[in-house]
Figure 1 (tube, helix red, strand yellow):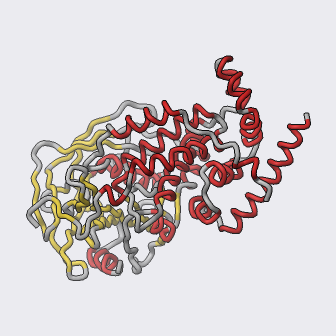
Figure 2: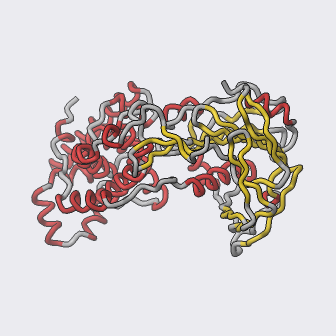
Length: 266
Length: 180
């Protein structure tokens, strides 16, 4: 292939640009907890978008009467209420949805891209269909979301994978964050269970802001005080291989089935 | 476990993971030329190169040598930066626009010194996005077909076929332009 004309024309970056860039990035420190809150919300809402066909961004913060419990080695944050700021919905065009789809890869492809390994449940309750795609990730992502669609748009199972490993720039060592469940939960909603003989936390319910909808398109953000709805689905949280697994089921799934599904991820 | 963190067995140090200075020296020209070939605009290529290295620097703790080569990791970031640019801005400055915005003195100097390069980026800017990206990976970044296939999720043979066809198309266009 006569391609010399393409290789002989390389440009050398300007020295002042190269030096200034190196100096700038060398002075940047690395976040010790890289974007945990932001990525959590973005990915979670991205998954919700798949169900509800619109994009939301919710900023959540807890009220002051918080309390931490350690259940089977897993940290659980318990709250009575939960203050949530609901951002207005963002209208999404078909072109934008299609463009976002381009960022999705299969699970096998994701395993090559992500820097943490994970297992996918081999068994799911009857009536749920696995969507073999993971969206919005790259080699720097510490989160990924798997999705099983149910009989209707309100019935689904979602598995959020969270890499617990992070690099501590101060000590120059890789560390692993303590296993912690996904966000605060309501009082009396949690209990310790076993997943393949290892401790896990089963949570009944979810905060009711998901059922209360989102601020209409174009309106200002709304702050609401969300209450715990003990009938709003199930959650199961466990750690395996320095990856935190957060399994959420909305409707039509029993605790036994959720644990069985978790145990099939070997 | 009582402590809030626990240290991985056999943890790598940063120095063992990435020799940042050496990586910067080696990859800055390659990333920069990747963007030059991809967006056909040298100043914009600087901006996107800077963005790529800033993202890589911030996320350097997440790179693991046992999962991918550093070049694959870095050019995955570069590709995402390019994709974001084209998607969000939905624009690519054609050569004519560059000329309109460049100051006359530097333009004259650039044209005199790099007439062939100006001709090349003009021709490149007319390519479809996928072909331009493959050319940028191959001749701007200096990646081989296997690395490009991994980044773009095309088969290696497909990459080779597209590149052959595109290079021939570029060469013919360059000859036509040269004869004018």
